[in-house]
Amino acid sequence: MSLKTKSLLRDFCKYVYYAGAGNCWCEDIYRETILYKAYSAITFSIYTTMIFLENLAALFGNFPDVEKNSAVMFSAIHNIVLAKMFLLLYHKKSVRKLNNEMAIVGENFEERFVMKKQYRKAKFGILLYIISVYLSLTAYGVESVRKAVVEGAPFYTVVTYYPHYADHSFIASFLRVFFYVTWLYMMLPMMSADCMPITHLIAMTYKFVTLRRYFESLRDDFDKDYLIDKKKAKEKLKAGFLEGIRIHQKLLFLADEINRVFGIIMSLQVCESSAVAVLLLLRLALSPHLDLTNALMTYTFVGSLFLLLALNLWNAGEVTYQVSLVSHEANDLSDET
Image 1 (cartoon, rainbow, N blue to C red):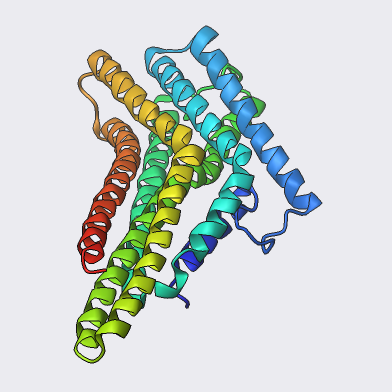
Image 2: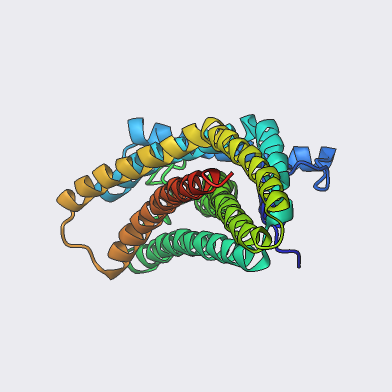
């Protein structure tokens, strides 16, 4: 397998495509056929309908305290989730252009062992987030089944205005299970929107790592060539340095593009985590003594959101750090040119 930034971005775009968010890759290798567009339209319509019913439940629903608190929490969070998913669709053309430019810039200088680190970081970070999300949703499903079997309560995970709490008909039960399955499936495009900026931040980090190593190799080559032919060594250093500066300027432009394209999505993630923190405190205040399954439900859900926030902040900070290292290396090298 070719370990390049291009491969990383293309592989992630493949996941985004199968999640129903369309082709975000710069080439038309993931075809948006009429059937695919119908599939995307239907799934997103179902997501929107479910979240609309959640909002009605939060505003007007007559539920017990636990279900009412869940309705308020999930309506707030899922509104943000829906906004992130539609923002990804809205910026799809910009994302495709960004992917193309990020794949090309500095591609010839990418080293295999650096790219392996990039792959490992992206793979394990995103995989950990996916596991935490589905662990949380599984905990909600298990707790709802337990309450339905032991207490005779309706099966509730996603709390919607319809079916009503007292409705125990077959249609009501079917819809509750259907909305739970929809919730599980909705996580795929949600995680696409969540992990797209993270993937680009990781790719940008290693673009700057590659550029720093390029400047270091220029210095090493200059030290060797200077002993043989001083004039040619200086000319080679100057040409290589100018090429590095061009790449540096391009990367700074792409960093601004990442902020422009994904800035609102990342801001919404901060709002989402903050909203969950506040709602969790309210929930704990109302129910300070949680049993094992309720505790697992609550803390895995919150953990997944704060893990997402951590991945964004960590990788954004790493980009800044690598930029500073490149600037320091370039300044040292410029003194010799």
